[in-house]
Image (cartoon, rainbow, N blue to C red; front, side, top):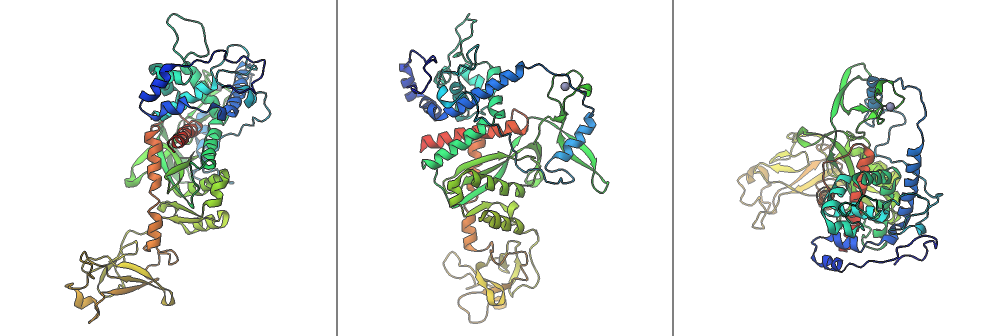
Length: 533
Ligand SMILES: [Zn+2]
């Protein structure tokens, strides 16, 4: 049913078509996408529809405006290359104030525009857009969401391919195939690739994808599909960039020659002579950078910071890192701050956040505590690779960088706790498979255990020997380990986003497109978990 709020003077669809075979399709099509699109609650998206039509109007106006003559931009490509390098978050000489770590889209104010939510519905396009009736917002939105739900990247080329090749998909989105030999335009015909690209661009530039994503997470939190938890878990993940890089040579503060990989300078205009036109040089793929993985493997890509709830295994947000070459430890704080600011329910419930060893840093932990009133728990980073072999208790061969003593017979000692009075960690010999202490019958007993002891070896190690371990939060403790078992939940969330609802190879350039891609994926993800709830 259409809402009665739609203006009287507007044309509403006179015939409501019911396709019997759509019901049949509901039962036969494998996959959640058809059901989700078939029952799509378009009423919830009217405000976004109004925002889109307003942005489309602005877009049409802007393209109609004539170009004004401007002066030639005197900057050379070589100068641009260096300026762009020093503008990056990971610039060789830090800027003051520092550049933001996370990507920040432009905020578009749409509150005072002509088209309002009550003016739009499927097939109903506001009067303001005179001329050829544009493609319906709801159909276009469903097409992008459906593409992601089918496991493909929600990018125009893929959406177009699926609309063209899958009649059930096209129809559930509200489009139909053009009859052969028909040349006239109809708004319900499957949109051309160019129209899909324009829709995606407008949704991206007007910040609608991002706001839609936020509204989906909020709706799921409000309805109980997602329960607030006491912990958040985070990590970063990379996507392969759709660009190449060049190596830029520069001089650092000490005048020493250095080099860094960077995306190539380009101009967005169509001018023939870029050296003598008024437009600005920019990076052809801003945000892309070299990401160093374990084993020194290097990837040219974009980096996203992911935050989720570990117990439910649910992704809450994904955000593009402003410069992919940034260190992982820098992205978590601003992202947690944003998520807690976006979701009041989580700001109330979250007491602790989990990350890998990239965030094992005392200063950072203090910052979380003081500014967000949240405990940061990170996997232990020993910052040393060699074991400790000096000043060990009798019978011990070494202590690993992680604070685990290993005896001459090769047994790992069990951590027991701390004796604060004399600042010592306490360990005891473990039990064997037979349930008895491994010291019983050990060939080294004479040189290790006290004579007559039946309980096995107990040792103490002073705080000074393990200077790199925080005695207030030792990583050997059972509690620490129990908390950190929830951290890998984020890796399964990342797999969901990257493999099940998309692809880790990007087909567009720039952080704006990358953030839009993350947002589209997350919108589909939130719809999917609501559907499965
Ligand atoms: Zn130009």
